[in-house]
Picture 1 (cartoon, rainbow, N blue to C red):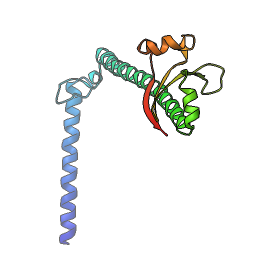
Picture 2: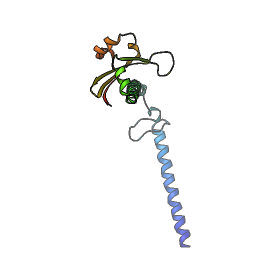
Picture 3: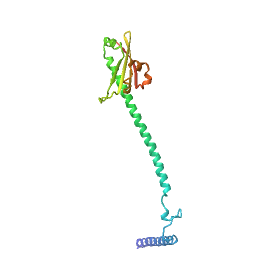
Picture 4: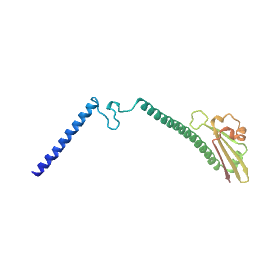
Length: 181
């Protein structure tokens, strides 16, 4: 019986609270002309939300942020392309060094007579991608080797001019080494 009385007391309290809440809601509706009032701001429910100005400003800020990200994305693509060209040029120079290290002393003496000038099409598309100039100078049993790799756009420049003024022709790789026999 005690449990039943406690339960009924709890139920009675809840019913009383619900009745008080309903009276409060009815009084708020009457005072606002049928619209709910927001207690914190005093505005009706129709006035809640974002204004057109706030929405436009929000969109503008997001647009400016996206524009900055787009510029950063473009910049990273350009840097990746440049890095790819430099990496290919360094690979071509290292490839030439490996080729020369496998040559005999007689072949190195022949190659030292004139600079070796090669136009290289890396991807076989018919367009010259790089120009590789190899200079070899003998001093005793040693050969000083200097390999320069230029962009393919420098294909029309004379060999002597490109060697003497290499800084003017956008050099991609410049590697020097010594080969002994």
